[in-house]
Image (tube, rainbow, N blue to C red; front, side, top):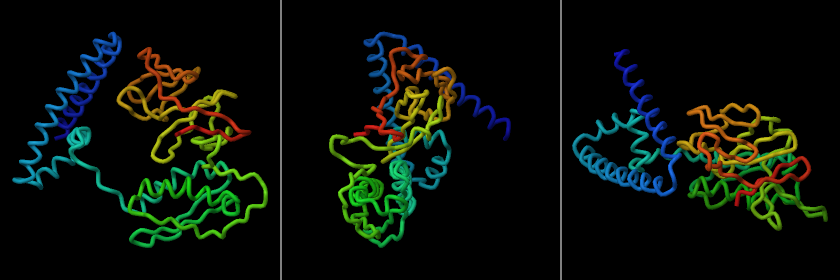
Length: 286
C-alpha cells in the first residue's frame, strides 16, 4: 500500500513538472502562437468538462456515495473545482463574519483601532463594536458604512442590517479621516504602517477578499496581487534576495521594483498603486 501511494505521488509530481515545462516553452513563443495554444487548451478543457458533467450526472443517479468518496481525493476534487462542477461547502455564518472583519482590520489597525463581533441576530442582523481610537472617532459612521458594513454584506449576503453598538461621536471640527474615507482619495485604503512592512521583505494582506503583498526596500514601497503568474499560487512564502522574489512553488522569479517576471520576460505581476501619507501606506484597490 505504501509503495503504491508513493508511486502515485511521484506520477502526479511528474505530470505537474511536465505541464510546467511545456508552459515555460510556450511562454517563449510569439503572441500568435500563444493564442493558438490557448484556444486549443480551451477546446480540450471544454470537451473534458462536458464529459465530466455527463459522468457526474450518471454517477449521482446510480451511486451518489461513490461520488462523494471519489471527491475526497485531492486531485479529483481539484479537477472538478477547476471546471466549476462542484461547489465548496458554504462556511458557517459566524466564520464568514470573522473572515469579513479580518479584511477590514488592517485599515482599522492603521488607525490604532479594531472591530469586534458582538451578536448575531438571525435571520439578517449583526451587531459590531468599534474599539481603540476608532470607537470615539468622528469618522466612525463613515468607517462602518464604507468599510465594515460593506465587507460583511460581501461575505454574508443574508445579512442586511449591520448595527454599531458604539455611541455616536459628535464632530468637533477636526479633520475626519477614516481608513475607508472617500473624496479625492476615492479607492485608496490605508492598509499598514511603513514599519509593519519588513525592509527587504513582504507583508501579506487581505481586504474584501483581495489578497495583496506589500514589499519595501528602504523608502520604496510597492503593492502587488499575491498571485504568481504561473498557476496563480501565493507568493508571500517565497524567498527574496537582492530585490528578486522567488516563488516557493515552481521557482518563478520576479524583480520587486518593477514586478517583471524574470523567468518569463514580458510578464508582470498585477500591480496596485501605493502612496504614503506620513507613516501610513495607502493602496488603491478600486
